[in-house]
Image (tube, rainbow, N blue to C red):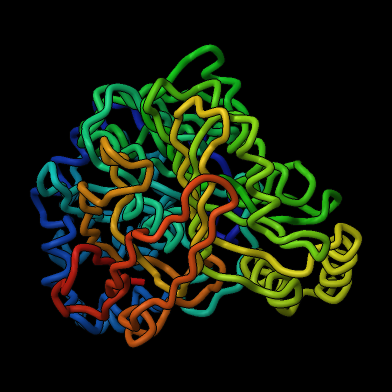
Amino acid sequence: MAEVAARSANGVWQAAGVLAPSVAHDLAARLRDVGYSYDAVAERLGGSGLNGLARNATIPADRVLAGATDPQATLIRAFALQHDVPRTDLAAALGDLDRLTPILHAAPDDTVSAAIEIRPYAFSDDHGDHSGWLASDLTPTLDGRLAVPRDDFVLGLSPASITLAQLTMRNPRGRALDLGAGCGIQSLHLSTHVSQVIATDLNPRACAMTNLTAALNGIMLDVRQGSLYEPVAGEGFDLIVTNPPYVMAPPDSSHLVYREGSFTADGLVRAVVTGAATHLNPGGALQVLGNWAITADQPWQDRLASWIAPTGCDALVLQRERLDPFEYIEIWLADAGLIGAADYARRYAEWADYLEQLGVVGVAWAGSRSTTTNATIPNFASTTGPTRCTAAWGTPSPNSRTPSARHSCPTTSCWAPHSPSMRPSPPRLSDARAPPTQSTSSSAGPRVSDVPSRSTPAWPPWPEPATATCRSAS
């Protein structure tokens, strides 16, 4: 049986089975009936409670609940705040708990705690309003904890996953691939406008989480375990979306599957980009969010253009952020829970030596879109800017090879923990609203001058309503 994560009394991660689909469907109905949906929880917790969760702090929400023991409050405490709750209270909300054993953990004094995170999630796009849940491992850093996640940890909602969802084209498609599905958030979005969604992940536990997310939301997915494009050999897609494990860690370090691969430097991201060409149907597109190395020997645009040139695809690359190697190292060592660890200095030196040996002078974080054209000289365009969210990249207009924004990005409603995109903390509201300063260059083909550049508040504080197309909280 596929596995998800559970938590023992001493905080050590253990393994547990995933719920059967029929049990997950019934669980979803009970969650909805007692008000464990995004809108209902947001109304209950208000701005202070939601903002606290966005900062990985549970105390504001717990104080808002003020000792209440009704079913909604019990579910919020169990699955959102990671608190132990009385077994009788949880049974009053969810019924027979024996069938839910795989997602619960027995705690002292006849209490129980959540073994996984079930997070309310809602979004709106051109295809309607959607409300459901995401299944993932428990956030290990709530309330200042510095827990070290297990190697096959399955990340839940993050600023990076929100950004990719906001950038993805939402016009109807026949077949789509969610490459490196993780908790299944991109598959959930794809299911609203794609006839058949295939989700893949190297991590068997991520496949289990994606299956659970699908069952909770009543969507049909074809979930396959395997590396990169191996599970879909010989198959074609109209859309491929991916936020691959792009972190450039030393090869001999302990790997977290959700963020690190076994490739040298940014080789995994390159493999994703170059390998997509043989899996894209005519007119198909690949959308990627990840890191690439900036080296001293050539401009980053030329380096990425060399990846694209053999594919026959047009490409647009948006560089959102750039860090020097030391900032990059510090972010990801902190993400791994190594702050204060005895071997922190040694690990830091290993990362610094590794990046220096590769000639890396900076690391870029951004998104790219490649579209099949079978052009002899593919069009490669790049743009840089501080914008935190842009309009979704629509299909190329019939008379131009530049992107249009015909299909709006989804409005996402959620509390997103401080998992790093490139930086572990979200932008200030003023940063998100600042008009972006963009420079656009093209390595081949015509210069792109009309790249979508709408500045939107990607992470406004709650309970402020959306002031533009994209909305989420972090």
